[in-house]
Length: 361
Image 1: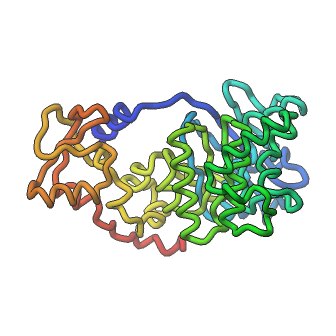
Image 2: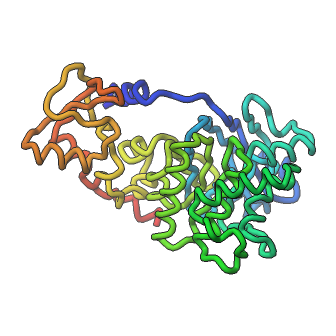
């Protein structure tokens, strides 16, 4: 399977790094610099709190976030994911480390440079919407342009465009209290998009929404991303959400990275029992794609299956045509591999639960 994964990387391609997080540490407390000595010596998060009265937020985080993709950072409550995203726009200052964006270390920015960065380059969408209750939908959406001192006519035109794109046409003069939670989050998304920032930071943006509305918002985000190609950093505690929208996923636990990879990597090759327990109930047939289990091949056999086709659809296709093998093709229709029905069935089989899983529940 290793060779197949190498082929996947070649087929899918790698994009340039937009955000580079290097050796990032965050310790909360009265004297974090002093506590760093204990952290470097390997003290656990619990011992740091109980014996040294400091909280370990992040330990030695290293992530390369590619441009024009959705990078998901996930973990349970207290894992450090929201702390991490707030370092990207310096809402939180690190104890040690670097956050480099387009080859510029944002920790070296002056106050004015940081303000300009937040206004023009990185927009944030919050879980609790963060709308101004005394401003209308139009005024909330145009807020980022207002502080950029964009002319009112242009600000209204640009805001109107995004209000329509997120499905809120006709609600321009409504106030947040008159909107449902899902509609309020659409305003938050429209506001972030209106500034045309290259980077979107989304901190549990859909977590407060009902399941159906949440799924709808995920679809809206994916549709917009297909057109806009923003660099999106998306925080969530929900694995299904991460697998649906993420091009790449980083999983944190107790402030440390446990695993990084594509949704295919996470499901096919969990790093440890903790991750294996996370994914045990995932509908693998909908997450895994044919490229995840294909073997390299240059000549075709059986029906042609798109490399990004979910195994659920591939199985249906093979079954309906009464064949046991199919060819995998890229976007140009070129054969790049093949899959067997038996391998697909084995890949979607629910893995046996480890005897150690219960300790993580």
